[in-house]
Every structure is written in structure tokens, then in C-alpha cells.
Length: 77
Image: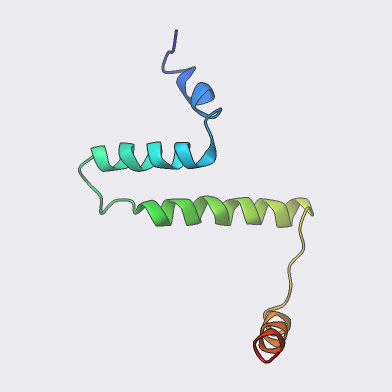
């Protein structure tokens, strides 16, 4: 039986897209869409994930000028 305490754990089993769609539906049901934009929510989660990865050392950053240099090389090929 699902309860308020077990529901979040059960929902985490769903695929990411299904969870995102559910979040959107729940947010829409609040009738206050100006409080939280769905895209902003997803980008916020992504930013938090990336920051955690950087802090944990599981990913590294590339300086902006280096990224632009590489991007220009790719565009000019």
C-alpha cells in the first residue's frame, strides 16, 4: 500500500521522462504556473547534478575560452 512516506520512493523507480512528466502535471495542478516553470525546474536539477559532480571530482570543467576555441575549430572544418 502506498503512503505519503513511501510514494516518493516508489515514484523514483519510474523512468526519468515519466517522472518529469508527472512533475509537470503536478505543478500544473497547482494553478500557479508562474511560480515554477517546468523547464527551469529541470535546468535547476541539472545544474545541481553538475555542481555535485564537480565537487565530488567525478567530472572536470573546461575553461570557457578553451571551449570557444574548440567550437570555432569544429565550425570552420
